[in-house]
Length: 229
Image (cartoon, rainbow, N blue to C red):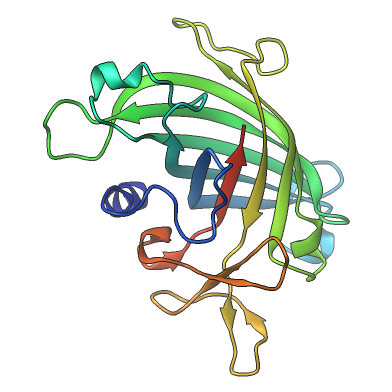
């Protein structure tokens, strides 16, 4: 259900929120995440002291600009006047707790509104998979709440045959993760709270970007992933 709440909020807001550069073609928000701590053998452990890696699966949703690989001009045939496409994704990462670096991958679905139904976009027009390298060394080290996605490869399914990003590469991409945070009266970063002011950090690692109402899920600020194709 959190995914639907965020979708409905996004539908009423701008395609791109504040502080997002013009070259960004897709913005995704982490709606939910299930994370496990793993030991050297990949077995889940309850304590950070015994963990070697962290593995998580997240559900994301957001918008792709019209004319980008995940929102081709052909969607205008189905939805005349559309300026964007809704993208839902399920992604998994595997990161080292030593340096915050690792891999990620998952699947996506591009959806549009079905006719004049008063509902969030849900009609699937494209599916595919993606993979890349994740670098969250800055957040892990407590330096800055910004991470990076490099070497991204994506592919598009043909019929009922799932594609493989490495073999069937249809597009490449890079990305920037922005983790939300709150500020104390003295300017220190703290975990954000539900329905309280929160911020993202800009590329210069100094400028504050306010988390907008349509960047929350059930009141909680969400991680923002900006993708460039």
